[in-house]
Image (cartoon, rainbow, N blue to C red):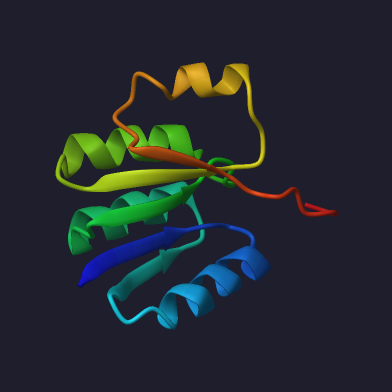
Length: 109
């Protein structure tokens, strides 16, 4: 069983991810965070195998949340969900994020 934490502030995207993951037998969703601070708290408490982390969130961004999670819980892997590509990734790349997933851009976001 893969334990997953979803960290996504956009309610439609978060709901879609939770619904999708909820239908996968080998996945156990251990929590859903609506911001970076909450993601750090939940990841530290729950110790999921993977955090699906949005890059842009209202309190602290996914980059800083990932740094804090990796410092507090080094065994937790992070997959960063991004809507932009390019130079911003260089700020994250030295960080031990295991993967980047490019999200389609949502209108009105």
